Image (cartoon, rainbow, N blue to C red):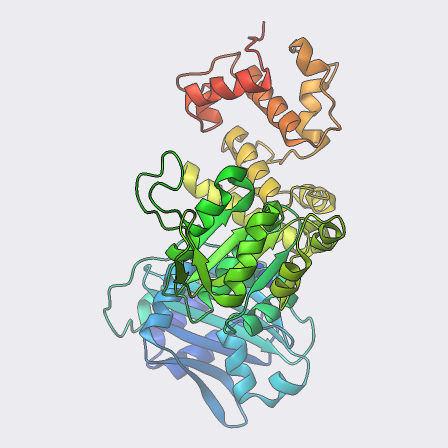
Length: 519
């Protein structure tokens, strides 16, 4: 599965004749069957297919796919869908999405429909290319192309669909029935579904199996790989999706407060305990609790956690009263728990109890096919936030460079890199859009040919260091150099870093960063 939220890089062609034929079909056709036949014939010139599918934008109790030419006498494929499902799609899916799928892909309604009606789609190789569009922020339209060949579609055909988008909107606005006038909130453009990532398909198959099972899940993977996103999918796909979802970072709690934070405390249990206070388990009762950075839990809290999992009761700090809780636990860690067990840093019985269904989230360097999808999404997301009408495009060479980079910080590093690049970009098409990562991020700061004199402590900082503190110091210094040491005001370092000036100053003091204006 391959997903595109923006057109692929490359030269575009002129499809004026196809657009003209599509618009004429919208005006001249007396019914939908005639419309899709004329559209199909026009599109045959630019996209190869065995069958063309078309779905009018609207809200129905049954999703209707029109098929041309007919398949063994079938020209309408249907899929029952509820108003609630439409609301979920409109609230969580992207405004415009183009996707290439194959026989072994899961998670799309369209694939399920094809498997239901077409023998070839269930038993043989086939390719599906489709464009889905949210029209007027309230209705979902779709066109698709089915080929009974493997890998029939690529970037070229995707680019064609994006080029034809304005003509398709004309067709939908002219002929879409928009049958029911139901007020539904617009989609969330900041939402990104894991379904969009080809490198996560094996993980998704596991998620579909485990989501409905009311058992603990252990998520394993490096920092920044998207473990919280996976936990969100498990929660949304479970029978507890309408109940509380509480998240806690075990590594962010002082050791002295871990147990009171997890299990709550009674009034008078310790100095400052002025009232009975529930912990995370009580707050998550009947719902789901995500224990992020599980490996940071002290052994004493691990023992209490094991009891909760086995007996489904807790005791608040300072109380001997047992409180029953019904909580599904999702635990996540970037540490090797098996090694921690050998070192007596993690309880073996707790690891066995949590390892009923472990899921490993691969690092970005292990699923490089996801890198272009994520980069395009973050660029599009930041373009909207910063008010750019059109997002910048990465050149093919720039995209290849970023795909070859190992991304040690994974998705979190990528998102930060895109935010940084978008802050620097001036919105000009003439200005080539680049994303600095790794050594490139600091190249201008440590270059002897730099036209600006940098502070002495910047010059001596190792560019090879991957310590977060060193990278943060270097980035703050770089921004200060850009602003000539100015922290406050329009275009100051605090604004560029999206920080409160006093917070930035405090961070600078802690890191030992001095404000040295450039000459």
